[in-house]
Length: 606
Figure 1 (spheres, rainbow, N blue to C red):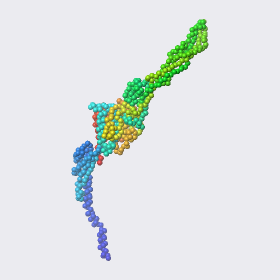
Figure 2: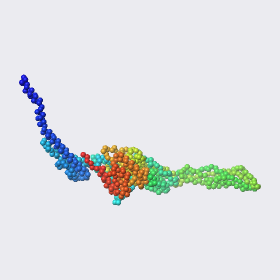
Figure 3: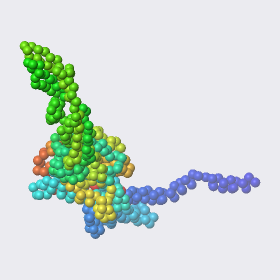
């Protein structure tokens, strides 16, 4: 039995043996391991080729992106040429550029020959890559704060006015920003326009807004005119008169309406040049009556005497006061006055009508007598009591008026607001202090336009960015501070402009152009010469804007270098590369194009 089991035990032991099996299996695995290692090298080589391809594709995409108006054929030729010049890998890949909206994508593909993988029938690895270049920030909000003061009508040596150049430059800037907007989401790029002079015009449609302050509007001018002033009279006000509420047309005479409306304040009042009082004095003619008054009885007290050698002689009396004499006639100073309760009335009183009298003497006649040297003198006091009636006539005549101050209706407001109370005048605080309504010679015609992307008439609305630029008219003094403050506020949530919440990855820009030095604001300056006090407010506003994260570009239009420089604008820019000192009108166009290129700069987005 043991001899029969021995072969079985040997068979089982052979089956369980491992030593020679390991060597056999290792030998069998050498080929696939070698192929796998070679495949790794093949794939690494393909990745290196793809990396070199992508570098060259980036160069090609940037070249095409720099010229977004190319035709498809032109873009393909340019992309291929630039790719070939920059590609350092093997082969000759085919590339395909596609321009869409604010982006260009260039795709390249090629087959990379293999070594190890060729042993298993795979002779090449397909490699492809795509480079995407976009121009501009993914999202941006831009506030165009534009000087609309009177000096913008000045021209340079070529005859080109600063305002005309500004409009041209602004249109070109808007076109570039529109191009920078992604076609799939055009709201990613939005623009607000803030025309400014001394004030900013927020639009008459906001007359009922809770954030408008009417307290200055309600202030009364001076004191009421004389009661003799009415329709047709010469203007009685030291400021002069205008033709009616809200009017800027001067008038030499009070109009037929009888409203006496003050003209704008002159330069003698700092910060108030061009400011109008927002009310008028009315002229209300008086109702007149005839008044008859019975006077109090009048008495004439006289000192009397007689002098006679025979105890008789002529009577001589001297009146002790100005009442009527004993002969019954009335003197001028005997009239009584009666002033009716009407302002500005003219009264005339008749001479008193004397009626009846009674006489009394004290002592009784012949009085108290003394005799000296045969001459007798008698003295006494005589009182004569008269009754009189005085008729006072209150005349009804043209030119007799009462005047009351009447506040102008808000409907005549032209839409301008002044700086807010300090220090909100330099911040973007919402709600903060209210915005004081003002009627001013410096009121900009063009109104503020909040953030939007209605670029031109193709947007289907008449109130578009392009039309807003065209509506600008030069007028008034320079207050860069209020323009900058509204440039901040217009990008904030809440009153007055109610911007939406800032989307992620959105850059905020302020582009501020002015052609003059600060000359006046709500408190300081005369509107013609530089005001350091206004500059101080401006400096605070600039600091606050930078702290809010705004990127600020400033442009100072200084024709022929006449004003030298604007330190406050230079310091306001985010850095010196973002400040422009322009000495010709045409330089505005060049500078705006440069800014457009910077804020819509090409960038690679894989």
